[in-house]
Length: 161
Length: 166
Image 1 (cartoon, chains in turn orange, green):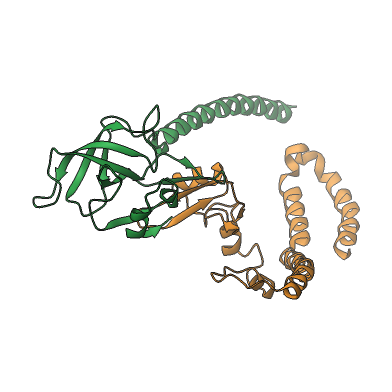
Image 2 (tube, chains in turn blue, cyan):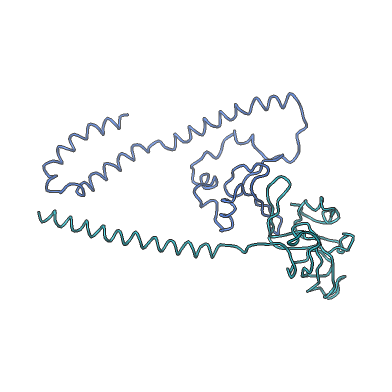
């Protein structure tokens, strides 16, 4: 039994699921669900559709190079059954999975490093630029100094966190 | 006072325009979607029935045949079924001549066909391989991919001749 990958979204296609399209040059396109099949029929490029694995890989959203990916590979020669080997493999699978998940988490953390600071800066900018929509500038002239002096210590504290 | 009045006016105006804007893009998007669906929707693929023209993918000499009778199924033939066909186009010096009535096996169909595990398979075009009444192929070569379901239909000879099995 072989678990194939969906051509469009690169998810696993389990037996009995989805549809496969055979082009006249004998290339097989497998799709996990009708969503992927329809997108293929619309001639969309999976690298340009944001929810696909291909897009996330191209744009550095997901971890791409890692030693844990090398365990999952297409092998055309069936492995000869060996009880000890099978036992060890079954033991190793959850371990490898755990390592992979932790590495993915750290990758995500690394990617999101400067996000909080950036968001705060943008919020401050928006506040300064568009406060006049809520309150008339004439009224603010007296107030704004007070507001800023009150807010600044709060922002500083948030940054330190 | 004047400033507040002006701002209120502008707000009202904005809301009015906003309403207009909201409605108009909605209309546009609707029409756009409709055109898209028309543009992208593919032909609804159906059974191979009387007057379906199929490509011949062997070296029997025929190029195109027209189905004149589906030998199995109530509504028509599908992938792997036998049909009776008349040759519409043929190479000048092939085994099969134009106008001949032949038997053929559907080796590729654009209509999706369920597989034994529940998934589906479909092909680019409708293609046949010409056979005699006993199911032995007339040609000696088969071009293009061929589904492995032919084995269940007892057309093993076609499978052995084919280069690619999907």
